[in-house]
Amino acid sequence: MAAMDRRRFLADSARLAAGAGALAVVGGALSGCGPDGKPAGRGGLGGSGPSITAPKRALSDEPLLASPAASSPIDHVVVVMMENRSFDHWLGWLATDHAWLEAGRSRYGKTFRVEADQRQTFAGPNGPVATRHWPGGRAAGDGFRGCGHPDPGHTWTQGRAQRDRGFLGTGSGNDEFALGYYEAADLPFTSALARRFTVCDHSHASLLASTYPNRMYLHSAQSGGIKGNQLPPAGGLPWDTIWDRLAKAGVSARYYSTDLPVTLLWGTRLLSINSQVDDYFADCKAGKLPAVTMVDPGFIGGSRTDDHPHGDVHAGERFLQDVFRAFAASPHWEHGLFVLTYDEWGGFFDHVRPATFADQRLSAEDSENFGQGGFRVPTVVASPYARRGYVDHTVFDHTSILRFIEWRFLGAPAEGAGHPGPGAASWALTERDTNANNIGVSLVRRRDAAVDFDVDAAIPASTAACAGAAEGLAWSPAVTGEVGGPQAVPIRSRTGSAGWTRAVPDHELALLATTGWLEREGLSFEPSTMATRWV
Image (cartoon, rainbow, N blue to C red):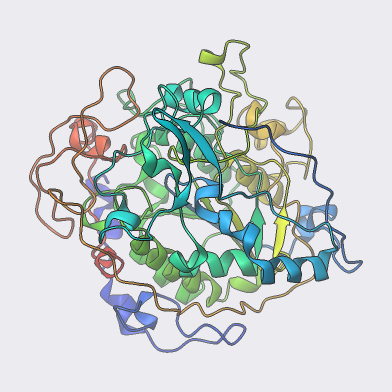
């Protein structure tokens, strides 16, 4: 963060603790807005499958998108993007959750289902290898972090190898860790959120590529032709973002970071919308969230809460629990939408072939095709206007989230657009978001504000960091050639809440902080001290 914004960015988290009394209960489940509202310490590929018949729609469930955006009951959108998990690997247990499936059939008809499959087999170097429940029977820290295993492959070339040759195929960059999966009990908060609200089982990463380009698509509907985790040019990325469109329209918007702000990829241009995560909790409690909010987890050092291997997934669970609770207990909830998604599949197995999307860089040459989406990622839409225990089978990517924001606040049509027409310049960023399916397609006008699950449920303590590594900075072999996996770059010794040490980072976003790019651009950042409660 530039020095001029330092006082706002380094907001004192003590102001949150000062008013951490009980708040109004939502659906009988919520007792506080922020983290201080509860005691610390609790806590080979097939095709896309057969066509799916849409579940029956109750007569009272008028689609929200059928009415003009100006009459929409949703005034606040909160988006949280985590890291590197696939749908089958993370939410595949839904297909065997018989109580949840029966409840869905009783509400939506006998065709209700979810496209999920935990139990698959892939060709390995020594014969077939079956997927398995990873935490079961593993040493402490192994199942929930992936200690002793490489970060699964998820670069432009590795993703294509996995698509064409399976998740243990030549060039996949994987070992058997990529075939592990979690059960509902391993993810106490995420499983409860998914059961209660709407799961999107055909939500894909925007690109069959790694973190940087996929997060660029969330913010700007393109990666500018960037395929991997290369650093931005001097001055940052030059093209427009959703933040630019919102600012021009006078729509309030803010990005809250736990440590390294992804918006710094655009250099100094987006500093005015940046805040620390401390401010998110304070703004929730005060009822002062903007119309559009993005909240990012911690990516590096001791503030790592993003679910990326080799961080502990329970740190991510605690982060998500607190971020959702704050919104659901705030005055914004009854007119709010909360979207949880992941940037890309992280190399983990999934049985649905990646989708292809309209894109300004669509190409018939696979090695240059930016229309090639990635594998499915876990995505949940939570709102008083989201259907209870529902599955939306619409094909989405990250720009589907932008399309809802563009419809609600910027004048975009609800669905369908083709090429930009008259007035599109006020909302359309690229051909991708212009043609994206709106992630709000399954929302309804009937309000059901009860949260109806225990958002204070205990989450297991995090396991010890992987041997020989600081929290969030595990050892990983150097990768040469394509930028997109772990990089052998030095980490300067730092002090403070992050507690970094000299190591080789296994997280792509660490490159921004370890190569000197931020310093050359006159930028800096400081991790929130609040992250220690999650890690």
